[in-house]
Length: 459
Image (cartoon, rainbow, N blue to C red; front, side, top):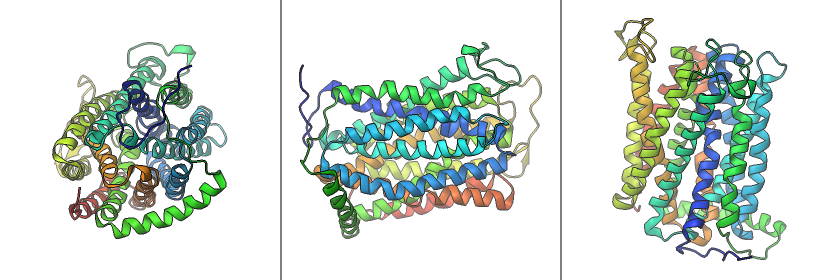
């Protein structure tokens, strides 16, 4: 059997090897698209939680808890992986946790004891697993292509992820998840496999579906993409060295003005982005009363713009640099949050009244709904470039042989306070008893991130 040569820093990997790496994003994305944003999260808020406001708060607390755990795990595990060499065993371990956690969401049925706990715990553990796996996958970038191609590779990966989310969303909404009122899917069909809309089985199937999707499409990474060579260090030695490296990496980042300031900025704006995606579908369901069809089509449209945005953003990154791409994306997201804040069920621009939708107005019949959809499309278009350029920027700034620990630190900077924005949204929502508190909090986080990144000198 033909052996696969191990990766060395900044080499030009084969096309099959790169495709295997790109399919990791494709494999993971249904968890974010179906569970975190467009199907399961709104189902949780509208069918499991007592009401949408408390549902948004509970989901925020679960997101915050996952972020807090990630803050401690990501940099240590990244450093351990650097010390031992190979990244695939760590991806496989995280994938097993992701599979079990996602599959468990099927048992979060309405009216069942502990359904809320099952949903929140499964979501939190799945989030931790998929984010930690991404640390190891990202650390392979400098070993696949030379620095001048980092932006394109990273952007293509995000585009592949968005496309995977789009395909999975179409499958679920077109054939599996039905509206509990009409009992039909978006395509007007009866759900496959006898899934019962009244028991919200179409919404809950997103858990097992995401688990199986990941299992199938992550296989090419293990089969055709070479791994980093082994260092010969034992796991115990690597753990001790990993903890020491986290301390030294933080110290190095503090001494390196560009890296340190970027990581702090990333900490703030990624925090806002996590919360924005976590509450997007919940906000639409709570404010406008959207059901599966409205949320599903909204998700499909947003994913299309996300795919295009990630592809274009990756090329802009290589052409004009990562910093302008990130700054532009942050500013646009802040303006979008302000726009969302100005919308209500019967008004736009805070005070301008609008007519309620009529029976013949069709999908997204009211003006506020149309504007919310438009703003969502903008979010999709800029979120991919923001995240893709963040990882390509770091890949350019740090030595390839130390990519794991620095990407662990990137995950740390993106997660050490990632509980803060969701927690702030949860607390503000509960305190003011309005879902509008969410976008108001996120504007502040985005503007602080913009200011911090503006001071980065070397990009």
